[in-house]
Image 1 (cartoon, each protein chain N blue to C red):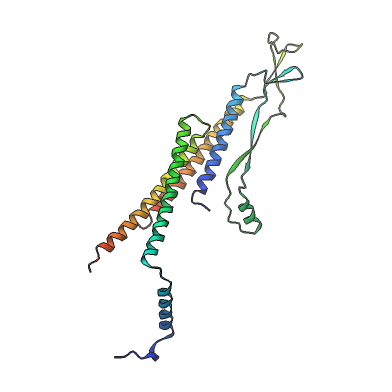
Image 2: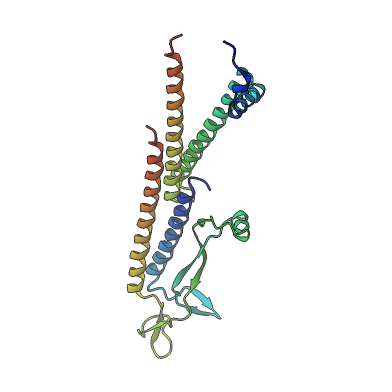
Length: 151
Length: 105
């Protein structure tokens, strides 16, 4: 176990939170996008994207240690497994007959992005990032303190 | 006054045996110095490797390549911690050297 393993774990979390932030910014940017992709000649609005995170089990050696019953594996951080489209929430229907993408009844399908949810996710990912930076600083100050042993 | 061989305890003979073993195993001063030098060289090379890595990451960031800012910062911090550790080892080595040099013969 390297002395930098906690730093590497934190780095993986920071990368994951950055990606979450990227996805959230994409969701907020496309809150009014009615033409995200074409399905059978029809334009479909933007679908909300979300990130799936999983524990990073790391290298072969960590699996081997686990199999041999040596539970000294502290984990290797987090990784992003997928960026999924939200297919559960229906599109919002807005009455706007002048819109070029309106259907015959004058309704336009708007993306299933909820701005409030996105803002909450945004704050959550920012706080998560900050928490990981705090962990990093704590880990670094621990190492710096260790260098003071015997001074 | 001659030492009575019978008064030697088991522990004493053990120590003598160990000392003999140590004497046969000890490398020549040249060899010891060489291995110390190569260990030091390896350690400093790995520290230098960290610095080079940090430099490369910073360069990538400046050139606008696809590299995360926190990765750059973390690499720099790792290099800094490694360098500090090296400085501590160096200080200890120099301290020991000066202590030896101060020895009055």
